Image (cartoon, rainbow, N blue to C red; front, side):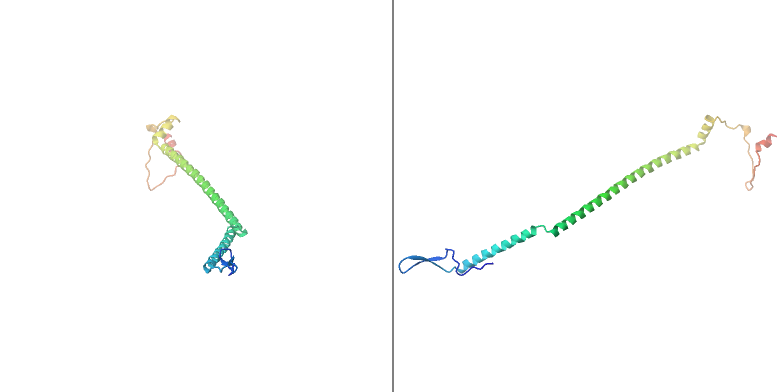
Length: 169
């Protein structure tokens, strides 16, 4: 910071003085203290503004370090986004597989119910009699064809030949 000199004269602080021969001359007068203080304060403010402007320029300038940091941060952000999108794609693919498997389970359940109904229908004696007589041409047994046997429940029996063949002899 520059100092204001005691002898600073800018033409404002002069006094007209009459000389002995009757002419007037400008004689410099000492600058008042409050004016010197104001000038010094303006000079100090100007220096402060200049330093502030330099600091702003330095702060706004992109350094290599800050550029490297921003580049690495951007790269990391892009990698994280790619990983997130990949994970989301895998989740969606697995959800599609689950939906397909659920559709298959529903189809198998329907097929199973259909087969159970057919099995129950095949055990229906009226249905069996209808198929036997209608498709296969079978007839119901006559009264002479049915024979009843009484056995001891504690005992068992081995049959080595046809029983109906013994009665015919």
